[in-house]
Image (spheres, helix red, strand yellow):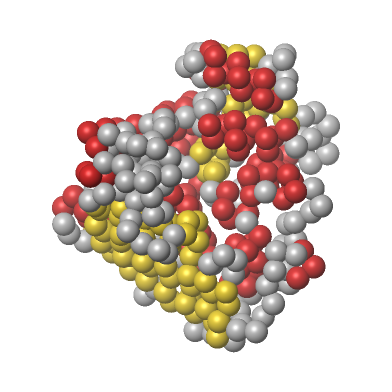
Length: 369
């Protein structure tokens, strides 16, 4: 579809749970170039609730995803289902001529992720993964500084995804078979994506990781989202890793849903460059040659960063900007901001960290991509 096309893109939401209701539906409601015409869920009641939230009583409801994907009028699907279904649904959608925005993580195995990439390229359809934290104002500002060379050579980074007591006790989060893992594949994926994107390096050489279930095994202790049963907790409660890149750069990864710490922060990174450093901690702290640089969330002070903040707060959220960018890339036949091969590398690193924990050995990733 060309940039001058007037027809709205027709979209479907597949998976009508919390992430669809809180994130994707509110974002799509504000975008003029797309209309959600179908909702798919194994639960007809959930699909009905999602349609009510979106406000289109004429939208179709499906409990059979294959039937939904057979609808030739649909242009794009948003996959919001459990992790172990991402690849199957996304590949089917791509094979049937739909563009796909898939929730993170891309899939629970790098093999499935690669199949998704190949399906996208083979069918010449857009595929992107929902790493919406790339669209935060501080991240966009930092990205511009990195690409402008203001940090110099970024030779070391830390990816932070740490919660003190915030285990998600709803849905399938604690089910390893359905989710593929715990905080590492969940919130850790966001931070790893940010680190690789900002460092602009996607060639890991060696990976070593260790997972723990020290707090999960004890049962709930003042958890933000209620109690859990240790017998149902089949994933790690924390994971830590180290990545050596082919170019010599290094990355430290910390991910936890439950950890005895006072340093809680998610979807953030610390960068160490030869000219300057940056720490995403309650905003953006710049050091070195950028020590006295002004940073603010006010758009007039964003400097070299893209001006993403508008008077319409709803249209300034990372979720809205993510959806807007994906719709625009379809309409303008452009590359998505989150490219599928970048998300594939995140998945390969996560998978290698889990393998290293299982084997108690470093894992070589040289030559993969």
